Amino acid sequence: MKNIFLICFTLMVVLFTFSACHSEKMETGTTGVTGQLSLASMKMEVDLKVDTVYPQSRAGVDVSNFLLTIKNSQGEQVEQYTYSEMPEIISLPVGTYTVVASSAEAATNGFDVPFYTGSTEQFTIKENELTEVSALTCRLANVMISVEYDEELRKLMGEDVVTTVTIKEKTQDMIKEYSLDIPSSETRKAYLIAPASAGSMDITLKGTIDGESVTEVKRVDNVQAGQYNIIKYVLNSVDDGTNSNGGGNLNIAINIDSSMTSSDETVGVNPGEEPGIDDFPTDGGEEPGDGDGDGGDESGSEQNMPTIEGTSFNKVPFDIDNDRLTISGDAELQVTIGAPNGIANLFVEIISETLDVSEVGLPKSFDLAYPGENSDALSGLGFPVGDKVIGQTEVLFDISNFTILLPTFKGNHDFKIRVVDSKGLEETKTLKLKVEE
Image 1 (cartoon, rainbow, N blue to C red):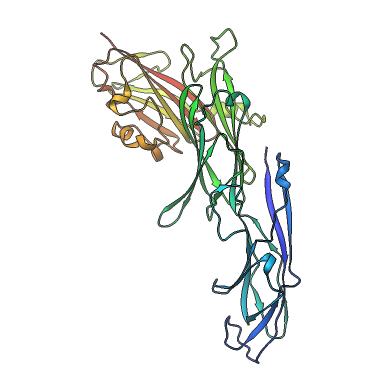
Image 2: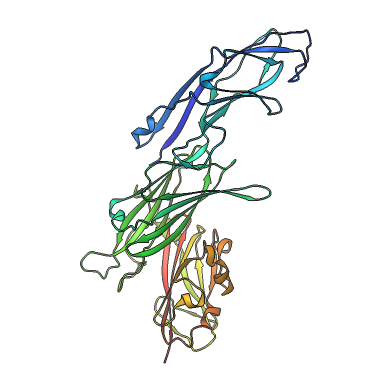
């Protein structure tokens, strides 16, 4: 669903200018040369053009406390009033001005705090002339966000589930971040400060789902002011083909519907492995998506599907689907991940019969694209992380350094690898290792 959120109001400004002297200079602030600005006929209207599934969004906006700021050509504030208390006539020096309207002094991060702003084009007050300016339109100037969970998913969610939204803006000197935590119990709309130009938005789902600790991150690009993003979490039942009762493991799809960029971003989130069930079946099931049927050409999707291949086990390619590799000492072990559409996430889960990876400073599962606090530990083992993964069409996952840890831990050790590309297509393979008695 594409929802367009446009809130605007029109201010009609009539400017009357009268001269106090005969100077022809038009520089703002010229001493002794003043005119008058009439605000008596200024009208402020609110036109809510909202096409959304939320009828309550059509509620009116109280403009009585909107700020009207008159600025000179240098951008300096000359006068400021609230709309309800503005005078009918004010005196201004002859010069060039702009009227700026806003719902507050500045945008903030929070709930139910939309920030509207707009300004006129520059206009000039001339001596003994009536000046009219174009209409002033105020629009939403921050990013509006809603989070939705389907009922089946809510039944499995712990009270600690929270979505953190972080908007990032690159400037010449630094990267600015605007972040807000949205608890699963929150029903109000969230508003975040918008980047000056299009930026990125990271969506992090964190908490307990079906008894498992879940942390997943998805990035959305081209985020901008006036945009309404609806984050939808939907529970899908995935059958691996071995469950005769029709049940299956749980898979969560995150869909982001954006009203301005017309983007549908999808990422799978898995709440944990059930005994005897493949968390990420490679056959059957549906690709994660928003369910609207807009899947494009199937043959083209198959050609662009991500791939995971066994590249080298001691210089020899191997069959990652069928081979269980025996580790007896240091080994060269490499897997190549391909994604023609660019990698969005690269999830890895380490499943071992005898090795507790937390004892060597590693989590059981992680996302190499967004490693967070585990970045140094993972990169120290030679794993690619962050920018070496995000957007790449091919990544070499080198597990060679990790094999040094294994010889003293007898039994089976598996690496479940799941790659998700920028279009939500994904592939999963399990790298199977063993250390014999």
